[in-house]
Amino acid sequence: MLVWLRYGNESFIYLLCASLEVEVACVIPGQTPGQAPGQDESIEIGFHTCGSRYSNDICILKNGVVVNAREVSRYMTKGDRYTKVVGGVRIVVVDRSSRKNIHVSIFIPSERVLAIISEMWGEYRVRVGKGRVEGEEKVEKWVNERYEYEKRVINYYYVEDGEKILIGKREYEPTRKLIGLPRVTIETKDGKVIVRGDTYHIKDALKLQGGRWNPDLKAWVFDRMPNLDGVAEVEGVR
Image 1 (cartoon, rainbow, N blue to C red):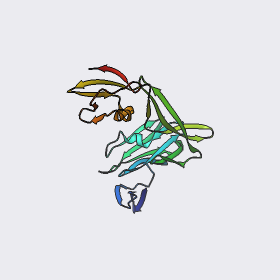
Image 2 (image 1 turned 90 degrees about the vertical axis):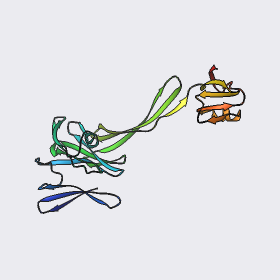
Image 3 (image 1 turned 135 degrees about the horizontal axis):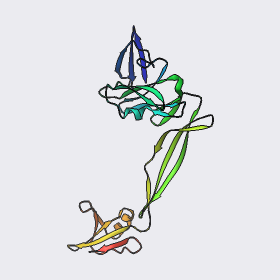
Image 4 (image 1 turned 180 degrees about the horizontal axis):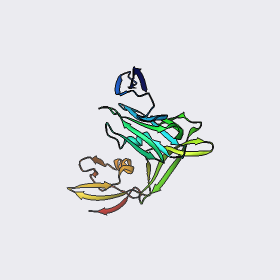
C-alpha cells in the first residue's frame, strides 16, 4: 500500500508491506500526491513491489489504448525519468525504485483517462471508471505427432457501455496426453536388456515385468527381454 505523508513543502511516499515494515521510497520537494512533476491535473498509476508481493495499475485511455504500468516498468532503470507519447497522449514516467523493490509511477492527464484498474496477485479491481472487469475462460488445444496438448487461458476485459477492452491474461501450465503407443528402443548389453524412450506412461507395466529404473542410464533395465506387445511401439533393437 502506498502512503503519502506531507511535512511543510515536502511530500514523502512510503510502501507499506504486509509485515508492517516501512521503506522510504523517495522524497519529492514541493510535489503533491498524484501530480506529475511539472504537470497539472494528472492521475498517477504505478507498479510497485515489496518482496514477493506486487501491485499494478492498468489505465485505459478514452481512445481505447491500454497503458500497463508493469509492462512500462520492464524498460526502466533506477532513477529514470522521461516523457513519451502513448496513443496520442503525453505521459510522464518516473522510476523511484529502491535497492530491493520496484517503484515506477506513470502520470497521465486526467481528462484523457477512461478507467483505471488495480491488479494485485492476479485479482482485478476498478479504481476509476463506471465499468467492471469480466473474465472469459477458454481452452487452447494443439497436437504434434506424439501428444495432444491443452492449456487453460483466462482473458480479462474491462466492460463499459457494451465495449470490451482486453486488460490482462492468465495462462496455466499446459497438460498433454499421449497419442497412440509410446515409442521405445531396446538394447542388450552385458547380459541385461535396456529399454529407453517414452517410458513414463508405461512405467507400471515395466515394473510388473521386472524392470528397474536406472537413473544413471536414464533407462529401464531387465534381466530378460520384456514382452512389450500392446504396451509400446519398439522402434529398434540393438
